[in-house]
Image 1 (cartoon, helix red, strand yellow):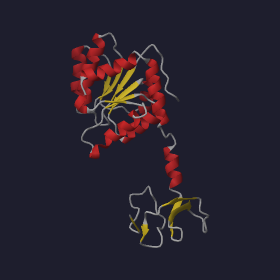
Image 2 (cartoon, one colour):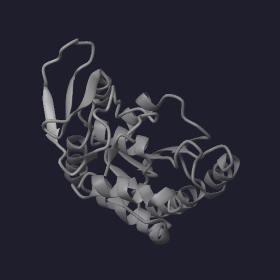
Image 3 (tube, rainbow, N blue to C red):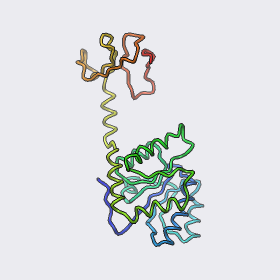
Image 4 (tube, rainbow, N blue to C red):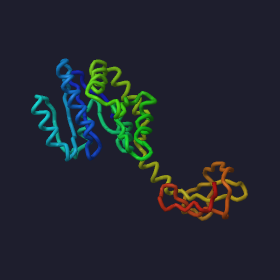
Length: 239
């Protein structure tokens, strides 16, 4: 269902991946203090991770802040449905879920991820207006509060971000992968192409093909290559 929320409340879902993220926890608590002082206090669902749970819970209590604080959230479907905006890292699963649901977000990529791939994930959504991004170097209570206030005060901008995120979503990704796994890929020596046809046919007609003239065949065919398996052997083709 497309993202739609009532105008009476504004709910922020804060996470840091399944393990939590101390930098996000600390910055969000500071931002919540700022929002509360300015009369913009939102409803909060905060997944802290196991390690930070007690400290974050104590900070909420000590500072008089309100929110549902837990170390881990089991029912993400219900939780996502409650959220107006999500503050999170930018792992592949997270970004895919946000796009599929059309959920507005503020993404803080983990700076030590391999090849900084979380930066790339976040920028894919941000480039179409489907997310806001704050680098961890620029993350602070003030920077996070400013972005949250921007969308608390402008519901139309929030809705627009959700719509743009959803355009990037692939709700039927699993079906696409399963269907693709049923195809048989082989090398057509005469046409110098990789051809694909439904597997299981004795003499299949070519259903689709892609010109791969840049590849030089070192063997006559690629037998039953599966592009979604980590065990695919491509040593029969040389780039």
